[in-house]
Image (cartoon, rainbow, N blue to C red; front, side):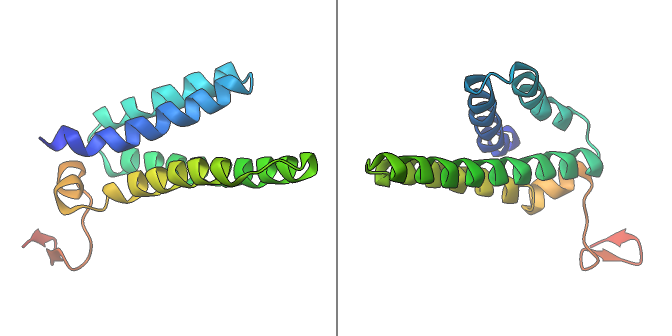
Length: 123
């Protein structure tokens, strides 16, 4: 059942990959498709790399949102629906980022906070 925690991050990477593919950046799209496979490695650095990638995806979605809203304003077209869709994608990506802070996921990848350890021994 722990695999279900990885569904939102995988969906987030599929969306950002499609975004880059639509922009003609095939190499970047393929790279984004490969990022979730890093989670096969049960190491804290693999989780941190995926979290960093999800954060950068959020930044890209925000950049895209502001860029498209500006473009739609120049055309005089309503941009509300576009903003709602991209806001939902940003929220999904942010939620995917914070999924890795759940205790069961942290235990799986060996990520412990100072509170969870007592002199190097797990509570």
